Amino acid sequence: MSSTPRVSRLAFTLALAAAAGCTGPSGTYVTPSELDQRARAGGAATAAGGEGAPSARAVAAANQDRNGLSPEQQAKKDGFEGRTISLHRRAEDRTRSASELDQRRARVQLEQASAIASETLSLQNAEREHRLATEDLKHFIDVELPRRLAENALEMRGSADNLLETREELAQLEMMYSESDLGDATAEIVLSRTRRRLQRAEDGHKLREERSAELKTITLPREQERLAQELSAKTVTLDNVRRAAEVGALARAAALRDLDFEVRKLAREQDDIARDEMLLAAETARWERDVSADNAAGAPAGASGVTP
Image 1 (tube, one colour):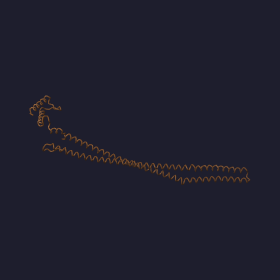
Image 2 (cartoon, one colour):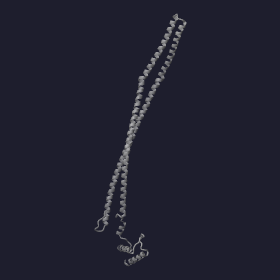
Image 3 (cartoon, helix red, strand yellow):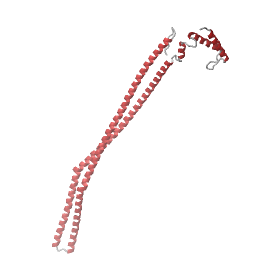
Image 4 (cartoon, helix red, strand yellow):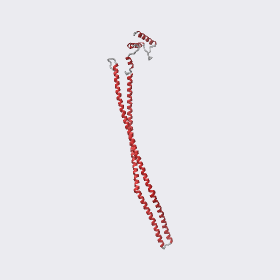
């Protein structure tokens, strides 16, 4: 192709620029000399690669960013930076979780120590109450019951003896006064007094027999039943306290297992972070070698490659 059309196109372009006030594509002012230099540079590029077709080197230069990386390389680099930030955040989250876990463990240990102390005290109280109830029932059966029955029998004999003695006394008085020369008034006074005492002795002995029967059939059996019921209640309380202590021990063991699981989980997370960091470092190094190789291959003869 001849140079006549290119010269005509250049002249036409200069004329248009002069007519338009010599403004560039972005609206800034461009002098005629600058416009002429740009047109000459465009003509030289057209002559080297054909009309209207930029060279491969010009395209590559246009695609380079300010760091000297192509869009694909820059995207790869941005991905590495995003992964690095993500790893840093994961490490921070893991550190915060480890600190919170340590605080939880300390709090759980304090709570468990308090619970163990309370459970121990409750168990000791329950065991003491059960022991006392057992001893009370045994003491009542072995000591109190026989003693109270013996006292009741002794009182019954005393009451019976008093009644018998009063009757004998009345009989003696009646015999004595029947053979005596004392007046009827004196004898009647003495005998009436003795008869009244005998009546009181008979009434008291009757009441004493009723109380004895009540003691044997109601009072003592109910008291023994009450003590046995108290022992049963203390036994149930002791069993409940022991079961509660076992449940508490199981709950504490489960809480510690959960904490241990969290520790292992954080350890696995730490291993994952370390592995991902190693993979990222390896991929980054490989990418840097590839960029260096690309720069070396695209550099002019005698120029050294640029490593980003």
